[in-house]
Length: 163
Image (cartoon, rainbow, N blue to C red; front, side, top):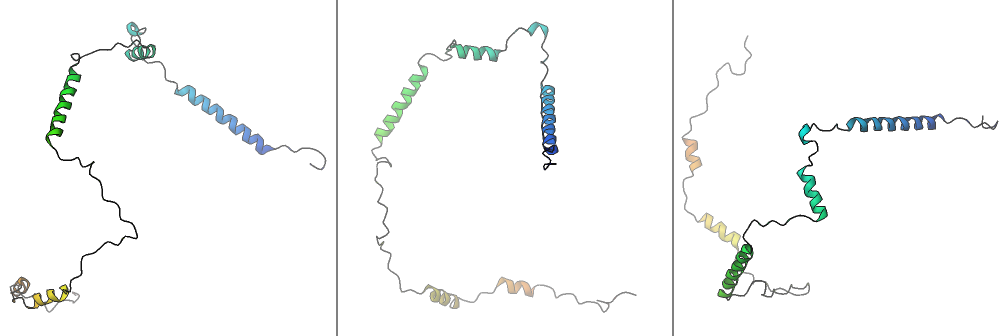
């Protein structure tokens, strides 16, 4: 067909467009069905705005009232009293704070750290000698084996298939 100059119809492209169109229709139907109906409100409260919306409007308009539930300056007095107590405690102790003590410098790679001198003591042979020289004590395991009854003797029919 192309040799004759006729452009063949692209069916796959048409199918693709139709699929996209159907998908769009399904999405729009879902959105319409997902819309929740208005909540049931009693007729006497239909025109009453919620407290939340009122507060939000006040905040946006800057009309929010400052309410003081405590005595005036009570909190400040408590904070001042606590800070004075802390200052008196700090002054009572003359020990320097751990933050003010300088830390020792970190050793460099090239620095040689002196190690403790090696001892000529052979700990392995010393422990072996102490075990050999220890007095013989009866082992609790040996005595428990002697007190156990002998194993049962199998009967003469042991291992035979019954007839």
